[in-house]
Length: 74
Image (cartoon, rainbow, N blue to C red):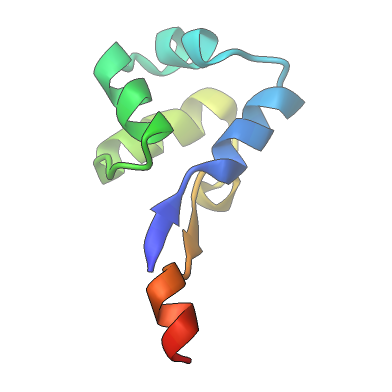
């Protein structure tokens, strides 16, 4: 399994925000935004800052996705 940020991108659309708006509102670096865009892990502290900036829950930011290899084996 891996973390997906798809819910975050949908939440940004619902809030009529761009990634740059989120970066400023949550005090994120451009590297943090880039890492999320690549599906890389970020810290729990960063996730909390995003949730606070968007006034949303964690499930509005991340979700767990099954890896393709695991799906084939099942």
